[in-house]
Structure formats: structure tokens, C-alpha cells
Length: 270
Image 1 (tube, rainbow, N blue to C red):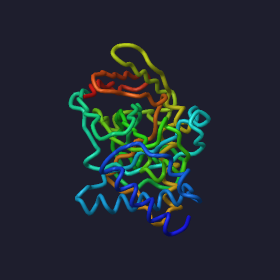
Image 2 (image 1 turned 90 degrees about the vertical axis):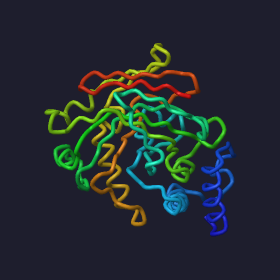
Image 3 (image 1 turned 60 degrees about the horizontal axis):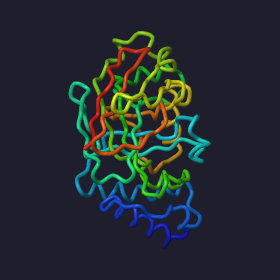
Image 4 (image 1 turned 45 degrees about the vertical axis):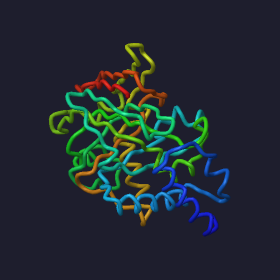
């Protein structure tokens, strides 16, 4: 991508996140935009936010659910930064979440890990679990600045992985969950709106397991020398277990789980 176009995209990303609105897809207007150049442009937004006092607290992984790839036309996972200003904690697994400032928000039930050490480059579940402090149910509110959620992988990487908000529920210590690695693929979640069942999902939807999603992120970051590596204390939300569903003010969404003693969550949107 030409330097002038790259600079223009970086400036547009900052402007969009300060004054959210819908715009034609970046990939339609910036010739040569790739997933990697999208990440580079997103780093300008990251640096801008750091200068304004935002603090990174973790990562979100997107498009780990392979059942959605053909629907969205995106065929690989991507990641974005989570910040102290986009992170919410659900007290007793209930929370009220304002949607102001988000473009076309959608809800995504996920599994989140908190790292106690930098995870190794491995797909060995035991070695990955050794780097994890706790596991929790999380809900990501994703957003899209392009009409109709028509995106490419490059649009997603440029737009900080489509991250809007991350809501984290009650954490459970990994050491209190024997058999966690084996249980994660079979974990079942239900997603309901105003007491009506909307969707179901399983842990295996996420690249086979949320632990596999974490392993994938470690590999991707190792190939991106300009991206900060994962460190102890970070949160990693591993991708949607169901589909992503549009939300609007006044709705109450709930989740429930089978297969692990994770509490569900009740989210009221305002």
C-alpha cells in the first residue's frame, strides 16, 4: 500500500474511533490493503490511545469460529487490543452496558483467560494451562464501521479486530478445574435475548478449543515483531462460541453454560 494511503488510513482510524460512524470499507478505498498493513495502520490508533492515557490490558481474538468464515468471507483469525477503557467487569455476573459510541454493535459469548506468565509457542494443552491463572466467561461487544458488516480480513485487522467492549464474569482458578483442557472443547453455551433462546455454541467451534485459539495467537504475534508479545497479567478472550448477534438499547441478554462450572451472565443494554 502506498505511503500516502497508509497515512490516510491511520488518520481515518483515529477519527472513526473518536467520532464513530459508518464508512465504506477500507479495502474498497485503499488499494493494496492487506491483513498485515491493516495491523500496521491499527498500531497508529494504539499509539494515539496510549498518548491519551489508555492502558492495554489484553487481547481479543476474532474469527476463531470456523463455522462463520463462509458467512462473513473472512477465513482466518485476527486479533485486537483490549484497554482499561473498553474492559468491564460484571459484578455477580450482571451488568448494564451503554452502547453509545459503538457502530453496529453485536454480542459474542466467549471464554477468557488471564495469563500468569507469557505462554509458550506450543499446542500442548498442559503447557498452555501452566501459563494461565484463571478462566472466565466473557462477552465481547464487537462493532463494525462498514455498512452491513461487509468486511475483509484487512478491514478487521485495521479496525483493531472490531473490538468494542469486553465484559468479564466471575473468574475460576485453573487449579480448581481438573480436566479443564479436556472439558473446553465440549463446553456448551446458550445465548438468549429477553428470555428467548437465540443461539447455541460449543468450545470446539473456536479452532477446536479456546486453548487452541490462545496457541494460534502466540504464533501470530511471534510473526509480528512490531506487535507487543503476551505478558503476565494480560487477558485473552478467545473468540465467539456462537454467531455474533446485533444488540440494541433496552434488550436483556443472558448466557448459560454446561460442561464447566462457569456462571452465565446477564447483560442489560442501555
